[in-house]
Amino acid sequence: MPDFASPAAVAAGLADAGYLADEGLAMAGFLALRLHRPIFLEGDAGVGKTAFAAALAQAAGVELIRLQCYEGLDASQALYDWDFPRQVLHLRAVETAAHGALSADQLEADLYDRRFLIARPLLQAVERAPCVLLVDEIDRADDEFEAFLLEMLAESAVTVPELGRITAPEPPVVVVTSNRTREVHDALKRRCLYHWVGHPTPEREAEIVRVRLPGVSERLAREVAAATARLRTLDLVKPPGVAEAIDWAAALGVLGADAPGTETLGVVLKVREDIDLVRASDVL
Image (cartoon, rainbow, N blue to C red; front, side, top):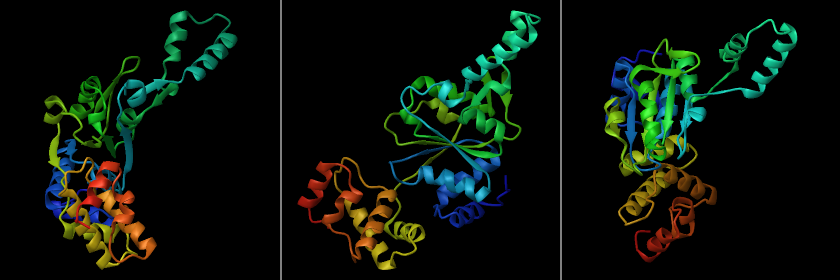
């Protein structure tokens, strides 16, 4: 893992990867790297939390391993699973070759060998470190999965009952994100550095649009950023994030438009009531 000398160096590396981080986020990233602590990013959907992890991996020149959280996520999807078909084939081959020379205990022990283990994201991160592990949208997972994750966050280790404890030779950089659809427990937060990722200022959002869409004019980028900021002042069900602003600018660029209007609201807003509210207002 590269040794970034300062938060400014982290910000520069992220910028080279196409991500414009503010001072607070660059500082959080720097401390996470230096202290070998997970970083917990919370904020509205679409503000760049997931993109930060991808850019950090690119800036550091390491692999990004992503675990997408959802309700019902458990160890077999997050940590490991056993390759049952291969185990059965192996058992039949051994039984045929050994002709009863091996005991049942020996056969069973041979079945639970590392070669039959399918590594899921958490185990992959431990075995492939240095890397960046993205635990995305932890607020979508169940409380039980949060507790299951604590060993990884605190000690860069996981436990496979049949094989024992596996510890990363070098701690992976762990980025945990949350859209705050529910409160994440303090036990998880205590193990992480925390940073709230808010919506950028219109000026910075225009810069982000220009970085992500070099073909878009500076004027259109400013118009889209200003219009997106005005939309966020309304009482919307789903306020637009940076990702939607980028999509809006891309759509307007394809249309050859100079400024955003209500005819393209379906690009930036995804709830009918929000579109009706904007059309009834005078923000555009």
